[in-house]
Length: 322
Image (cartoon, rainbow, N blue to C red; front, side):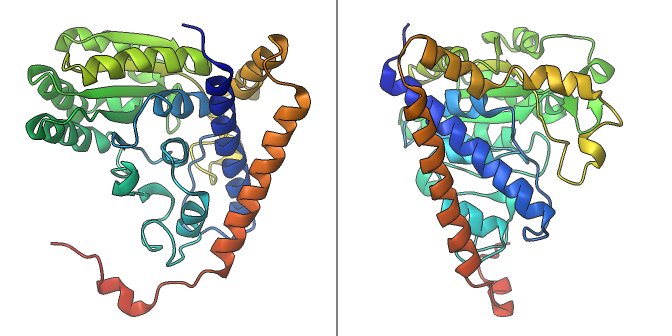
């Protein structure tokens, strides 16, 4: 299926927004402005953009510790995200969650999660809720390659399969679980083959090709919405930065810089840019306008965060559940 000009430019704009947001956080973190940890999504933009572009506003996602891209692609406002990372009261979680715990039920973001695979049971529960309530809402569950070894992965896929739940499991295989290569913890090459054990479709796609991700995610989401059950979609990609911004030399102790460079040459944004220019879908000037406009949006978000107040000590007792 050929994508329209509007669809392609939307995907491009979303990826640019994620890239520039992450690069700004990288700079602010180095300056000591952003507290806590920051796990950046640079290099993986095509996965979040391609998958979330197939979702309706009423649909749900669960995210990971590397979740900025997912939340942006699902429609989050940058100023509230930036405020949250600054620890400010105007952030999505009133400054109490930080980078790894952004949530907004109003836009279907059920929460990023600092626990590897922690979003899987939440996604299955949300999908079960949709089925019991008789809605056609779909839940997309993002997780990493390392999470596919966890018990919760197998329990979640089994429960979703048995009940034919409207959920799409999206494994972002960036080849490393913290500092451990996939080759060191799995004897399989494609994680999608694990779908066989649960009698659901399993697909592996080039996670740096946003059009391919968009198309395969669309099939899985339509299948889920039609009541035909879950799909395991594996997107092979790569993170350019280290596991987190404190990772020495961006992970040089467990991967070579030549490997990083090879993946940077497969930049998902550049790939789509070449298509847009090659097919004369957009001019170089139009693409530059998208970058400049997005930079302005991020500048405004940073200013909003800087001018926002910190939570007060008494705010500790609000939004606490037991």
